[in-house]
Image (cartoon, rainbow, N blue to C red):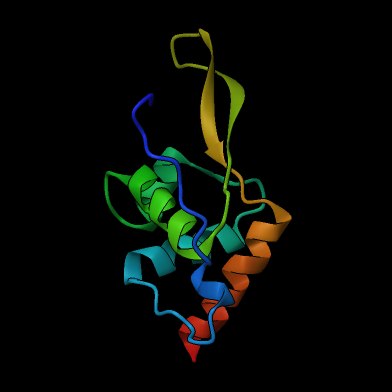
Length: 108
């Protein structure tokens, strides 16, 4: 996106003194990421939220919690036998730490 504005260096909510309350969809998504071993596909993100615009909720988690959650392209074979690549959202170790902190604050 050529016209996208660069992100401002704002402190994440996890660095503030006040814990944040995540909306229920974001909390469900954070829990799904925390429970996942290999990451979540787009479809799994949609099921976790539940919605049909999962990438938007990944974007919101990134913004609110200061996580990266990169989307890794992994090879697979389509049902038509064609080689392709699909995206899998895989939180980094640092992301998992931030997600756990946010979820512990959500319980309190």
